[in-house]
Structure formats: structure tokens, C-alpha cells
Image 1 (cartoon, rainbow, N blue to C red):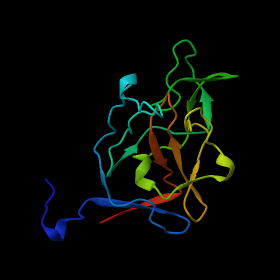
Image 2 (image 1 turned 135 degrees about the horizontal axis):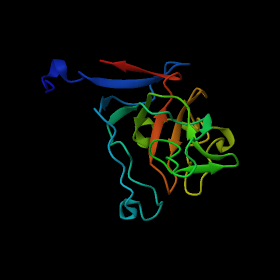
Image 3 (image 1 turned 30 degrees about the vertical axis):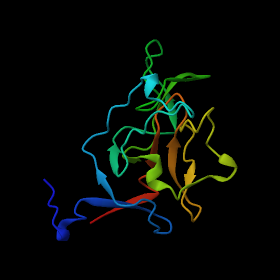
Length: 173
């Protein structure tokens, strides 16, 4: 159990910073032991935006051990395809159903935990009907302009932010 005395108040808290400029891109966050389950129940989606509740609660993060984002490779089993990414739909392209072979160990956050991140110019890699799908690669940048994260927030997938482990780093106190 975490000690709550003043000298241990920040123990176990982590801030994520941009690898290019060193700017803190999140407030202090507590690590979750596992990624929470995602509800596919349509009743849990926001009535206006149709977004799912965030995968990770505010003030927390989890490390996603599964690949996220491009590149994608053709799945071996085309008859019973897996989701393209760990918490998303199956995606079929010209070559068939694909699966992510992208970066592992992304920091998974509530999208509001990095409020200072901005969309890439011209909304690059942010296609989707109600928000970015998150399957085109990095689509959020640090205020210095460096692409550092992927927001997935469309109406049919998860609602989460993935920090790239090569473009960000964690500072724990």
C-alpha cells in the first residue's frame, strides 16, 4: 500500500516528457497494473460524439505490451481474423485482413491526460468519421512540433491515447 505521508506523496507517480525537447506532456500519472477491459456496449458511448469511454481512467496510465499502429502485416488466418490492434476492429485492406506489427510498450493514457498535444498539420493521420481511427500512425504532436502520440477516438473503436516509447520518456519520482 502506498504511504500517504507528505514525504511519499509523489511516490510512484510518473510524468511523460517529449524526447526531442524535454517538455512535460502529461501531469503526474499513476501506473495501472493492467489495461482495463473495454466495453463494447453501445449504451456506454457518448450520445453526442459516439465515443467510447476512455480505456484508461483519468490520472492513470498503463503500458500496452501489444503492437500498436503501422506497419501492418497480412494475418495468417483470413477466415477468422483478429482485431488489427489490441482493442479495435478487424481491418481488411486490398491484401486481406491485417494486424499491427508496430511499436510495442506504448504508454496508454486517457486522451485528456496530454491536453497540450496538438493534431499534426492538416490533420495528418487523423482520418475517421467522428474522430481519428488511430491506425495510420502518429497523429499528435508536442508543442515543439515533434510527433509523439497516436489518438484513437473514432465512434467504433477505443478512446485512448498511445505515447510512442521512442518519442517520449517517463520520469518517475
